Length: 175
Image (tube, rainbow, N blue to C red):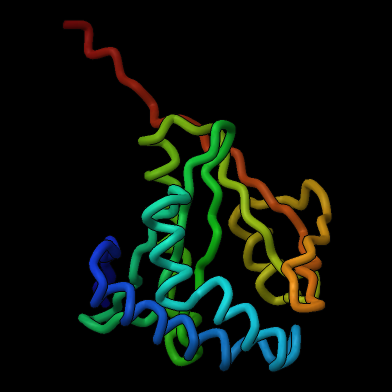
């Protein structure tokens, strides 16, 4: 299996990303937050216009997760002063459990090191028990809870999780 990460920049890429986001959100989140909130959040945060704004003016970097030449997921990162914020990481149901998330986290950790940031921070819905367990297995721990009003009568009730990222080792070759 080969995976790679396509950096999202163009209008056609953003359009494909918004379509993929809608598909993933609608297969995974209705049982956790309800269909009405899924519809609201996809429109507000994962539409073409929202993604374009996040990329152009909010510092987000989106990447497709590909498996055998097909875009099957995506993630978004944003460098903050004290951490690399992992805003999103989602994979289509049929491609979960194949190591794609773990490989993506290795890439994200490498990006964190390149940016010389000490940790990765993410938020996860407190009702998303399976995902929380995955994050714990790969070294994240809960640092606090937060409830954020996102409008429309909805809130995001999340854990904030972090993982410390050690710098790459440097070797003194004695030259």
